[in-house]
Image (tube, rainbow, N blue to C red; front, side, top):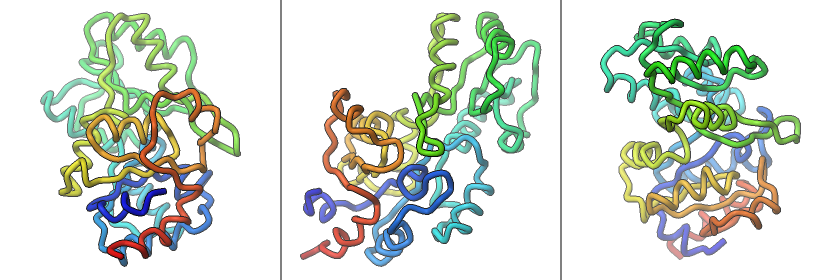
Length: 264
């Protein structure tokens, strides 16, 4: 990775799963990378598409892993979705979310018959025809389709697994309505992160293991994107993608060495 890219950076966006940990197992050098970022006084924000945990749970997990972070340093799709829904007033919501996440949406009335919005997140192995068909009918009768993200796959136990993007795409196709995507690679999500950091796009670098969601999404709003070759990274995906990263890291453990060179 080009040292100049790090030298010019005024802010860093950091993916979590696949970069700093995999299956909640800390990646080698992850703690050192966080310490180096703090020592360099480089503004940073964990920008994650995680929809299996709410903010409190995610914060506790990072602390338990030994990755010091403040809640203000974490931005995930559920937080952004709540902010979006507030712009609609008090919409009636049908929540396809894990029970833990539903607590974050408690301010919105729930409807399983005639909602204004269908919110899609990760519900694990619960997906089936009945759930999909119910959501399809709701969208056909006028409900907005809001997806916390549109990821294609993720990694568990060193295996790639289908992510919620497949279900979102299926509903879009069947209902003929485009979903409102909240998380990566939504440009609005990246802009929200930049606003939180207080940095400009051209001086901010995104570090992630997903060439499309992390790197491509960042580049589309004028940021630099660094592909980290851990987690869900696969060489064949890099070859097939039209996205060309601005840099590469074999692992996040390589970041401290680069940060030491800042200003030299």
